Length: 223
Image 1 (cartoon, rainbow, N blue to C red):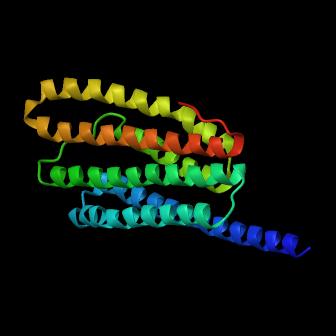
Image 2 (image 1 turned 90 degrees about the vertical axis):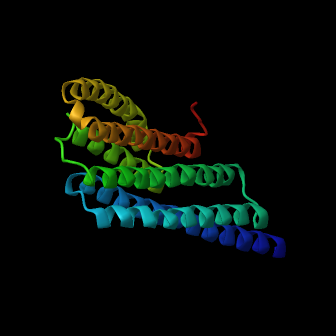
Image 3 (image 1 turned 45 degrees about the horizontal axis):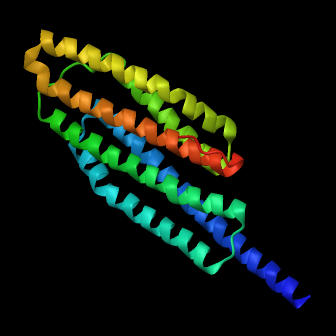
């Protein structure tokens, strides 16, 4: 009887610590959404101070990743996770790495925003903002899928990745043509091409997050 009570108390403690871990992941996700919205808005506003702030704030995401990794390791070392718990903890370890890389790319994009501020303005490439909005929705959906273990949202994110890839391929072709027609604007459009590449990478990381959600719920991990 005493053993059963001890086991129940141990399990309750584990559940509470797992709840805290998942909340830390959600908070990181909310902060990431806020940063991403600032990055996208600033590609139109071209505010140097905001770009610098986004770059400086990247350290906060590095710290969040380290803290979440510590929480994961403490759960493994001090508690007795079962198979389902292991999947959830392992997924948190992996997906926060993808979230941190998205934050890195937000900083990378802001570096190019600063470069664009220093140059003569040029029209945004065709479908540039449309590509950004599709990527943004992927990030939002992948973070929502984490919170709710939502397979439908996770599958939606995975299916949408091809749309961003297609946007990037079309934009690369479009910018190649524009740079040939307007060689004086080559530096600006190279910057936009680099930003588009980071957008594609963010979409890839969102897909990775969605796949880790599927691993938690269905014990399936796609390559």
